[in-house]
Length: 146
Image 1 (spheres, one colour):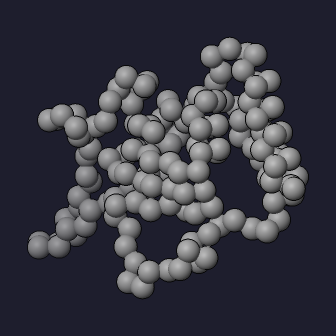
Image 2 (cartoon, helix red, strand yellow):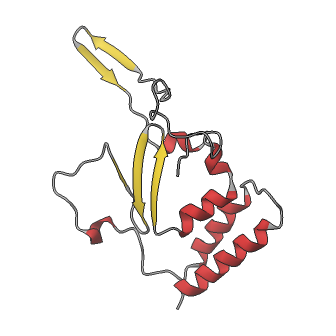
Image 3 (tube, helix red, strand yellow):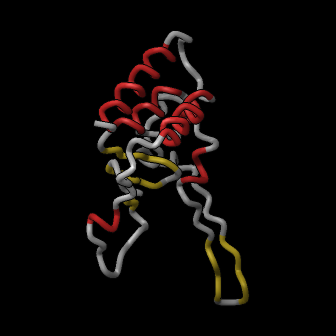
């Protein structure tokens, strides 16, 4: 998912010269000591047209794997993990069980309610798309509760 552009035709920033548009705020604390502020990819989500659309939300929720290009970063997510991004490192690699954010409580109505609340504020190309979306949500929640 290329989430930084204004639409699907925007391409990937940095692929061509002078297309990255990234500014790194650097503050000189005192001579010889400078600090750089690095934004997290979550900081770009609220400004991303991609995250305002309903179909990318579905794509992200129901895909087993996501490769996301946002804010000059690349993030790889598997379902049930927080994701890996190129500026993250571990001194001791955690086991897959430590990375998992899945709980055994897959029949929680709160999870379903959260999906509905998140989805209802998004933009649809056609109003009828909401029926297909909630049909998919319903089918997924039934499969998870078996």
